[in-house]
Image 1 (cartoon, rainbow, N blue to C red):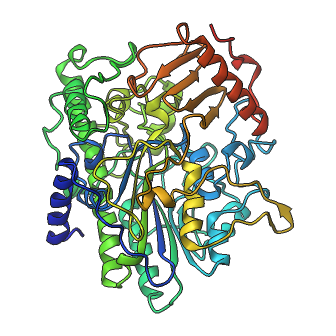
Image 2 (image 1 turned 90 degrees about the vertical axis):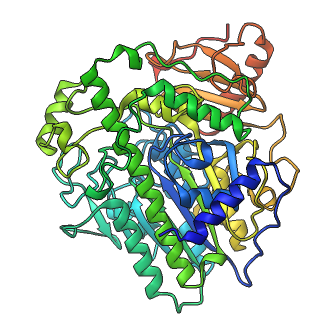
Image 3 (image 1 turned 30 degrees about the vertical axis):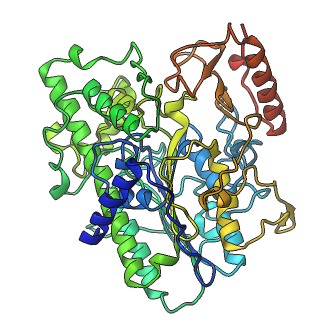
Length: 557
């Protein structure tokens, strides 16, 4: 629950940030080591929350952002499994078992589908350093007993192991080959869930109960809260369903423009930036008839309610830490696993075979049932593009909308900045940051196996207000998944994507002026593109990236 005082602080601090006031001092370091809380949203778009220009009510995140660090150039993978592997290990996902390569058998090098012996989880390291460790939510890093969170350093766990599962007690899933989603409690599969189970509330309840029971334990804690929300199927409790009724009747473009205006006001993007206009295959609002608009509006109303509900329950967790006298000593990290999802499966989706399977497992298809148990609905590419403003595309792509994520860090040692940071950051930076805060050392071997070194670097200095850049303009971050690839160095980004999202050739964008990736500079800046492509090729060799024969890049034009 967000108290009145927290709301007042959020509004006041946010106003000071917008006025460009000087940095506030960092929250003092705790007497001992800090508690660590990592919160991962699932398929949350860059501009969905209040700190990033969104109209969805997120007072908890507003308060965290106003008192902490907000990043605008923070990158993840375009899909959840690879991001989660890097978030847990600090190692590139190709080396951690989540290369995500189509056409290779499950279990082959780079595509094991579980964290491999050559990596060690941050929970394992922190538990070895004297931390209590907890995990609640979506795991997505393996289903067999040796792959579950209890086998990777977590003392207390309540996890859903499926990628696309119901938010309710029915345990419906789209996982092929089984009828019900897999849930584990401390490594053991659960046969059923409580009748009143709702994922967002249940994961927070679990952490509150476990932390409260252990409150007399003087050791600091590490808690990983991996929400299923707002991943489909869209679902919210009955009293949340109509909180945004009528809010989205104006359509995609109007909401996009409002969000972009807010981002410009916060100086998160330049005032001359225009949003990506959308893929030609995605209908504009004016192309829809009255019934189609009504259905689209309802989708976004439910999605927005899911995001606010996530924020509300995160607020409950922080309030419980306050009651335990632990909030002040807790470093909170919030991010999303990838961009907003454009999926539109189900009742009016384009895949008949998948639609039949969905109708068997989620039989309630009418829009009156959307959001209830037994229904399956997603909000589709039009709203996903809205959630990605001002960026191009969405989840599954290496365009900015697929790989740029919100990042908010608040707590001990963090300075509240007057403006959002433009530092080039990556999800592999978070494990070094957590270990640095905890005073823990990353091992060179674990269980007799040599461990891959961490790929990122600690953010602790910039969180504390250092003006020294974490990365120089010559340092870079590279990406690959299922043959698509990208590399970012300084203001430049090269990207290669196959059809239908790309054309199978390298393209070059100057992101400080063109975050929407509208203007290809590959012809006018051929030397820059050549340099980036060579760097990417070195990355691919070092990370043992496998490229399928049908995904061979054309040479730079």
